[in-house]
Image 1: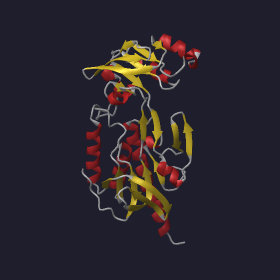
Image 2: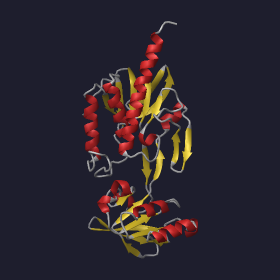
Image 3: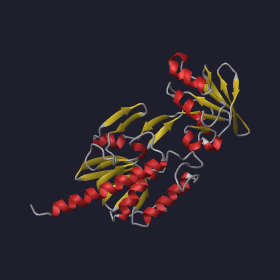
Image 4: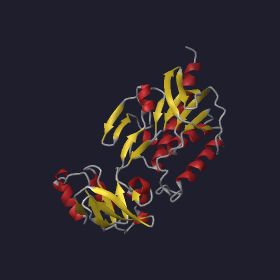
Length: 315
């Protein structure tokens, strides 16, 4: 589905973000005959990945193909889609969303599915190879790179957890402390790393070694190089909460940033606003995001229905 939009002034629901969560919410709303618009800037978090894994019946599908199918599906039910960026939002009689193109569209209910951005460690080679042989999620990529020589580049003391997790997919794991001091690791951390057979290497990482467009090792600032074929690292998650903050949504602090307070359906503390997918939490994989979008879409439809019925009942 290419851009398909009339950009009417008024919609029942506007979905900001066209990833798995946003498209899933739009699909439910379209099938419920709700006049719905999806606004998508075209910057999915999983764009660097060649395939997505762990989604039953879609395991191994390229993310771009998955999203294209989703856009085609919502189009069957009259959902409109526009490639644009929501730059501002205001509440009053519903919600007014200002687009980067200068247009303003309005809706009675709003779904925020803007996800998050990954900020990678500033180590030469990491950004260039992210999604190829520099990875972050063993559940997403572990099977495909199993039994290779892994390196784990620490970005925080919690990176110990990542080093322990990836040891399930390879017994040859080296944990590079990088800027994390060894004394920041607890006794339990060190015992578990030893039990998992993970080698701990102190010292700052200077760069990744690459030959013939293939990762071959991790080079430290002292010049020593450790042969590795795969590197895992944890990006810094940056929640995309600008629109939610403009609306006054309550946020909660987590080790991975500040996310909106939501109920089990994604309803925020702002009446009429839902947050789904990585817009409401760090660990929402594609399958979880799609499920959350479905729950939000169904809840919003019921909310609109009861609001309209109550308004129609004589006092």
